[in-house]
Image 1: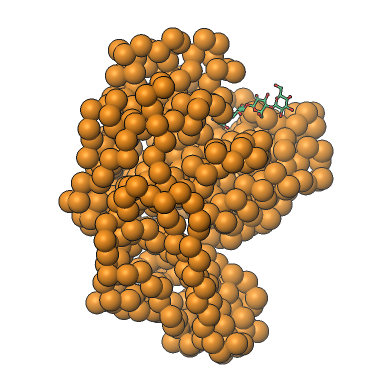
Image 2: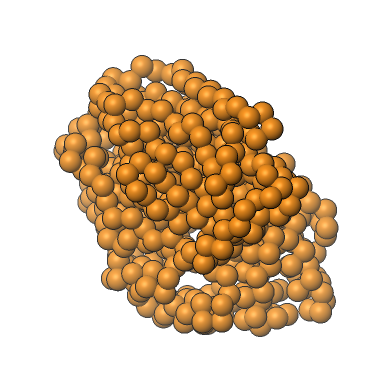
Amino acid sequence: MSAYSRTPRPALWRAVIIGSAAAAAALLVATMSTGPTPARAADPTLHQLMVNKGRVYFGSATDNGELSDTPYTTILGSEFGSITPGNSMKWDTIEPTQNTFNFTKGDAIVTFAQAHNQIVRGHTLVWHNQLPGWVSSLPAASVQAAMENHITQEATHYKGKVYSWDVVNEPFNDDGTYRTSPFYNAMGTAYIADAFRTARAADPTAKLYINDYNIDGTGAKADAMYSLVSSLKSQGVPIDGVGFQGHLAVQYGFPTNMQANLQRFAALGLDVAITELDVRMVLPADSSKVATQNQYYTNVVNACIGVTRCVGITIWDYTDKYSWVPGTFSGQGSALPWDENLLKKPAYSAIAAALGLTSPSPSASASSSASPSPSASRSASPSPSVSPSASPSTSPNPGGGCKVVYAASPWTESAGVGGFTANITITNTGSTPISGWSLKFSLPSGQTLTQSGWSATYAVSGQAVTATNVSYNSAIAAGASIGIGFNGRWTGSYTSPTSFTLNNVACS
Ligand code: G3I
């Protein structure tokens, strides 16, 4: 392990353009974070490699206690495009006593994400575990109202701040039967559809997921999830994605037909994502176990990249220093791509290589900052589908007024070449609701979309981009905001678009 060394972090540029009808002016703010000078400009992060594959993010779980560990947060904030709170948005943290909500810990995760241009996977609204005692003690007749209240309060609080929600977590036993819980016991399987409808009503923009473990490969549990999700879709329940946790173990073999399994869910018209990936082993580690672990990480990345609608991969924290595994599986661990000293392991190199980074030998790659393969890092990849668009019943915005905040995090891979993630917040500053919208802007010369983005349908003609609402965010109430985004590539030098129209009304 001592052979591993830390890879220098690339400098991160941030550019923010704020357009405001009231101010009738555009403000460009560009800052450059300070940090170690990169050994070479071409060190891509896992997130950048994932974006280059046309996907939305490569992410990590994290927790509040870890945010005071500066070496840890330096990597967390720069290597990943998405973070998931490991505990701080769970029921016992958010609503420890009935109708008393404490968002402090979850807010701290969101604040970190926003400061590092990361999206947040909200985890989780309804789960049998980490439930405060008062929920289990409720009479059955009171459970539905309590569940709906919890979802409404939490999803409303984080509206516009989370990319997705794990609305229902782990509904099945391993044999594919439904797991008992206060929710199942009170409402039967109907609690699931009710939870999704309640979440959508509270936050029309967040992508809504169901999430479970041991569904990564085909089998009884994955079949049960497939039947459930098929049924939810056919009933019109607002579900956008399925999360495959990916808690794997070297000693249990790799999930059967993982890519084909992901693909059948995607074929239902859903996004899929690997949401909690780790690959544990019985300690001590040896070369054989490490080789198997490397292969499993490679296999997972290949399975995701092989499915166009696999939007992202999240590892369940990135370092063995903060892994949940040793505390739960005595004598097991070493599950993550960074070791306890925050040094990259061969698993990191396996992931990076599967995402297109030139892969030296495991020992060398784990200790060096390998360059990306130019062809892999620059190639435009197939785009994941986005949610189906509503008929674009765009209407003028008679109340006038819109504000657009375009927050981009571009990176440089080699001289004059790089990628970027753009998160766009649209605010209706007028006095009347907007019903159906199209946002138009021009990408600067040399920029392209590599991925069809999230929370809007994107049409590109030359440099002109039109982002049209999807069904669940067509309405923007007076004073309300919605968030959309996409990933792209730039050549030359990076600049952000400078003017926007919403339904052909200038926002600045
Ligand atoms: O915060 C208390 C602390 O005050 C107390 O001193 C300490 C004593 O044990 O416990 C602390 O709480 C722990 C909590 O993590 C925060 O660290 C709990 O004991 C511990 O059980 C809890 O474990 C979490 C586990 O979910 C609970 O089920 C893990 O951190 C978290 O990574 C894990 O995540 C789950 C996903 O949500 C769902 N999928 C499986 C995954 C792994 O189990």
